[in-house]
Image (cartoon, rainbow, N blue to C red; front, side, top):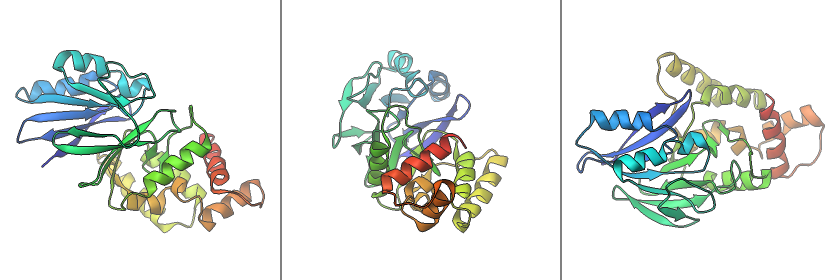
Length: 257
């Protein structure tokens, strides 16, 4: 049985900590800061960090990698098409790795960065998706194109609805405010805002999400819905849009929201 815990980092990052209580082994996803992981390990001295999983090269996801590897000897895995510090294993589409006895499959999801990858565990339906798919949102297009990001999100949206979405930022409330602007009559969004507002007031994190919830409330997975297209028509005039064009308009709107 693997437990998954969020270690807060910086102002709004989460480092995901996977724990195997039987072996006292653990792994982390996207440790942008070594300190939260070192603090956890120091309070669990009989545990061993075996793996460091990286989704993309941004500093808030890799800043602690070298320090943690030097201290623990953990194996570092990351995207083959990006420069990842101290990387031992370069991963590409369809590759599989064993972490804490779990098989993780690699899905290439360019858009936020060109080499971004996600880790998917099929038996437990875990998705560690970095900054590609967020709760009620998606990552900015720092390097990729709307076509790439739309394709990446479409591929993730095809995973089972029960998939647990472990993204890496506490952006949910701000994303939901935009989602409500894009789809003001969506009752699922209104209910989710109420739920997340209460959680955050109680210092409870809003993650993981589920793919089922994202399909119901995330505008970037709903760009083919008449309600979204109607709002885009109101903003920029009525015209035919491809799904990619609708996504691009929506992302540009969110960038300035």
